Length: 313
Image (cartoon, rainbow, N blue to C red; front, side):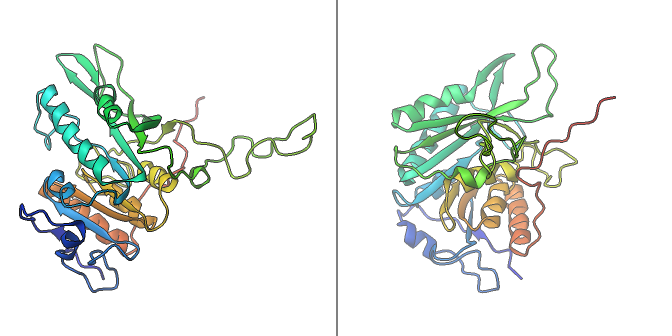
């Protein structure tokens, strides 16, 4: 049975190389190895308890295949310290610059954000943060709309029911596997009725492109994945990103781990994962979910499960 000891001790200010950093980690010698002295095996996870910048500074240039994160939105939730919007921008810029440094040339960054509301005014964080990526010459491949069905109800504006995922590649030479994330065709047996292709299937038998609008329920009280985290990432959303943008044994970095959904998605699909979480409560939640995943207890909503729509009379 896997041990729970995935907590990474604080690293001193000395500038270790990434290999030296990993070599300082405790090594589990049980059936499921979740910490090793190198990224050689499947299903390895490094959960760093502390500020993500302390972790990022330990990682070598050009070593990560994919970076996925949903950073704190600066809206004053219990786990956030609300910052002046300019300070928030500068903090995010510092993190993004480090993420760019550690990203491989054929790698991706997926930055998922919502809105910042101040005095009734909505500030879209994707618009605020886009110039940071643009200055780094990163290429936006999609601005994915994550549409979910439930949320807070507004009284003086329309209720928000979507957030965005900014997907950037570092160069034009990037990995993308559409077949890994195709969804069922609405009419899978539809055929051409005239022309040279008459009688042939008119759609891809592997399924259709999921498009850039994703209907994935957010994690609320009755959700199978629900933990104590107030803004929990659905595992299926992370899965769609890692399956399309990485191969097995690739390394995925999560600067803000939160409840550990990203680690569950990575380990479930044989990706190596490394991430940071500063809040002790959420470190413990992540530790529990990682342990369960490694022992075959995977509580997730399937990635392409249709959203429930009640029948109308």
